[in-house]
Amino acid sequence: RHGTSVVSALMTDWSKLKPCWAHSVPQQQANDSALLLNKLLCLCSEVSIPRSTFVDLFVDAFVMMLRRGSAKLGDKVAAMEMLPLLAEDERPEISAKLREALEEMAAQHFPLECSDLLPGSLDFLAYTAALNKLVNAVETSGNPVLLDLAVRIIYRERNHFMEEEFLSALRRMAGRSSETKQTHLVRATYKLFVDNPSLPTHLRLAVAQKVLCMLLKRCSKSTLRTFFAENAADMIDTIAARLVSSSDSQIVSKIGAFACLEDLYSRFRKDEVMGQQSEINAAFCKARRIAAVAGNELTKEVTRCASSTKRDDARGETKFLDLRLGLRCAAYNTLAAVITCTQVEPNFYDVFLLQEKPEKGEYLWNNLVDSGITYKFPLERDVPTRRKKQLIGTTESVPESTDVGRRQPRHVQATLLSGSSLAKDATQFSLSLSEQAFFRANKCDVDSPTPDVKDKVFERMKFVDLEDDELNNHQCMASVCYMFSHMADVGIVPKEVKVEDAAAPKWLTNIINALVGDYMTKNALLFLIRALVNSAEVLTPYSHHLVPPLLEVIASQQLGSVLDSFVIDVVVTILVWSSSYETEELLQRCNNAKPQP
Image: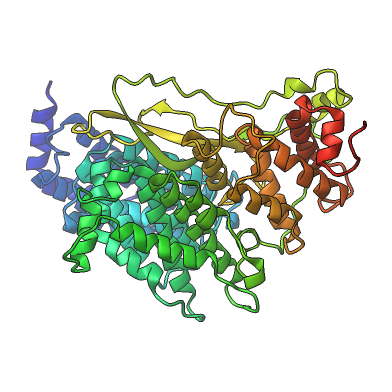
């Protein structure tokens, strides 16, 4: 009740308070002053109103406290209690003062790597508390300048212990921010990525693939329209530019551009990215000065560049191999998003996503999987493998009257093994079988994109649910599994019609040829088979065509001679698929015996 009068009285005598946090006063007195100022900010809302005269006074006091040379980091953490309220004021001069003071504090007290601090020590606890205050200020205020600073601090290390907490805070912030705030955040993050090619490679990749893409997946469509209308033409210029072999920063720029374009086609419907009414395509055509707009100009350019990049032949190259692999994967994911968004004809999936021509040196699976690493699978599983939902970025807009629960998760029924000789092993190993990758549609919450009022729809995030292992965490696995499920949704893969007597479609023939092709590396073969196992239920109608090559792979010991969990998953998938086969029919299809008279 008396808050306003108390604050007004203190503001009147502000000049008498300033010596309380001067550099010459004892640190405990400065800490008490920080506590007092924070209480004043909370006590009277008028003090913390952005652009008020009071904010300038508090910011000056805050900066002075952070610049005390004799203060330890733990003392400065007390002053950082004020940061969330002060950061609400986004005037450039205020944000600049806050950033400069925080950067000086980080340079003075923060280690280059958090592993330099002993866990549990006072320095480690103070460092953790300071980062928590910074992350909380970013989440509470949505200040783009603080976001930029937090990203630079957390991602200067490859694996920072605060990363997950930081990303969770950004998800919450993006979900509840206004469209204006979302636009500022996305612009600031994209600017950080584009305007700083000299930053460390791993930091720029993290900005694009983790921070920016996460924001794009959770911002409103209106925000995305504005963002891509402004930047789509520059992104096309980036991915279309000729690759300079000596420039790793250019490769990273291409990866970031592809990642953004993947989100574009994952979030919007076909009519929103193609056609005469598409605002994004219209903006692209305007930037290109295209007078006669057909509606597919942007999509055509993205498809051309992504298709060319995924076929990149890196054989003989010795520089930036990991980055070039990441670039091919980013291009494939973008191409998969474009095709699943805009096409329903099987020949597009065949030509752009599943076809390879090894005789011409055009490889697909070998280009997406690193042949130099070794995937290890346990022999036994004491506990069930943890599953992980991977957000692929596709948001489905549906009318309000639509039944939200109409699409249910699909599960492979492991109970079909009942009575078989592997039933006991199935229990022991928990037979991971990487159940069918599926979408789960949830009504948006605080972590979901903000729906556009004018659209009057629910936006629903689509996930792929996979076992949390190294192979399933490959950056293309979710895209491939989603592609198979989408092909079933649009009728390319039949759901109920049995086709055991029909010839395999061309896109399936490409997969079969890859399974039995001697040009496939072991890791590429593991990746493709894992994708088929993950999509077992969707591909059940074509199991008659897939069982023989899978049996051939196992019999030839291309997966190894050990009965590990991966081989067991494949065997279980085959048993589930072939449960309805007659023995003689199965032998005949596998060319291991002729049918008995």
